[in-house]
Length: 166
Length: 100
Image 1 (spheres, one colour):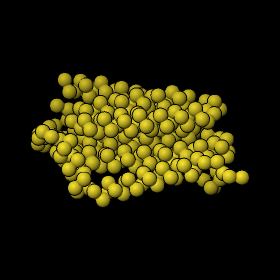
Image 2 (image 1 turned 90 degrees about the horizontal axis):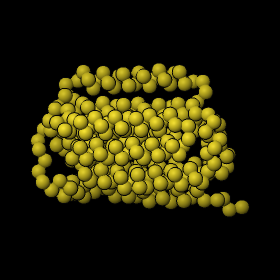
Image 3 (image 1 turned 60 degrees about the horizontal axis):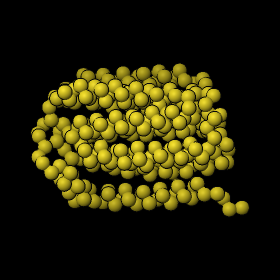
Image 4 (image 1 turned 135 degrees about the vertical axis):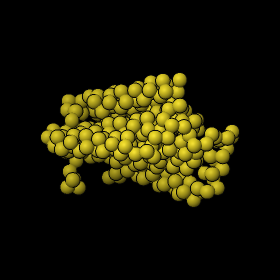
């Protein structure tokens, strides 16, 4: 049952990711990426991380992709439709990618550390409560630093996108 | 039950596809979107290991990755809008102001 759902979501996410890379139109890429994020959040549900799945949908699908679509609407993407891939110099990149993929697959499949079939211990109830306790007790400083980074990014984005006063 | 290495292999496949988008595409928008895909495939790994070794730190790291990604996208799209206004191009190989 679990395996069937996993294969379904994994296949859908790989297909939409390929659509993202291969599509001519950036709008199609954005929509494919949105579908891919939805599949990945379904995989988070399979991994018993419902909070992360909801965060994934809220932030990626709800905020980031809408931001992308707004930017696509603001700037002219018609000239970008004509040429899809970098001319020249794509053969070394392809070789590098194949090497990277083969290396990672060999590492994963030959190591016995990844052959765990079952979770080590079953989770107790109240998982989100435990997660937030850990987050706000042990990881409070990184949490605050992340909020400062978000504030800095907010100010930076406004400054960057503003029109220069003449 | 799904074995752990299935999730890892899914992460690897998505990572390679995203890296292909970053390395091969000309359009800056698609490059940025492929970058999102890279970060998401890493998140799958974090959460899978956290689930199978019964450790919350996987999920906590994933939350931080998502927060930093949101900041990165905001800044990157701000730069993109400024670039489109100044140079009116969206191709990565035509943006050579910093001699890249």
